[in-house]
Image (cartoon, rainbow, N blue to C red):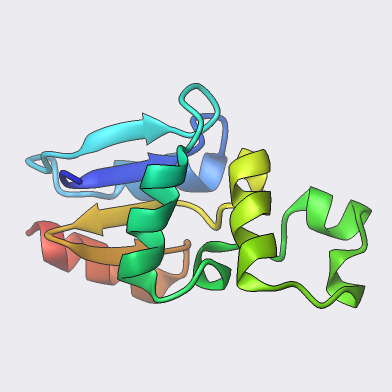
Length: 117
């Protein structure tokens, strides 16, 4: 997987983070709504992150709507949900030099900027 950012083009937080990156950043931009995640991509991400749960957003609207917080989810459940709907991916996800950066915290954003500099 080349240096890639998995994001949602309509997400203002993703846009803000991408805009803050060094101008010389050579990234492949993967809009997860336009180009859904494949099982192969999710597995590569999981291998870098350590688990499917690490990639999973518990802040997603569908997570709340389906009352998933009151269910015991397994790694297989997290994988299936990630493949089912793009909103379950904690975004943005950067894969840079075979290292993964997940989410939109300031700490993660700073690490991504440093990795790209």
